Length: 140
Ligand code: ATP
Ligand code: MG
Image (cartoon, rainbow, N blue to C red; front, top):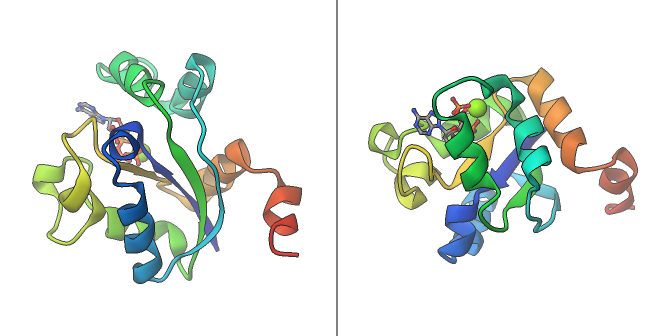
């Protein structure tokens, strides 16, 4: 199955994108699609719509639009739950050793990577960034 990851602007700006890809591939994910993009205000607001109204929402949208990020469609057995495990807790201070956030995140907000939190959201979020034809077309 597929899930959506995003290498967030903090990790891209810090030159850690390659290390994050390497970590994901070593963990067993296949990168089915990826691109570098810069989210517009509208895209970031829509992507994090579920958090609208939370105290961290405006700051999160500002952070996610602050520079380039890299959405990725990642494939693996049980991809959604497994990617959440591989990235670690939202706050790197709480994340398990060896997780991407423990290794690469700066703070609870600037936390290096996003991962979908349910199969339903994974389907929505993969479709947010990648067309079905693109996912299939890349791999012939
Ligand atoms: P993500 O959805 O990015 O994979 P998550 O599911 O671990 O992260 P969410 O609760 O969905 O965490 O929050 C979305 C993002 O909002 C977090 O990854 C982080 O960047 C930011 N965030 C969440 N809670 C806080 C907070 N208390 N203070 C600052 N930023 C926060
Ligand atoms: Mg989340």
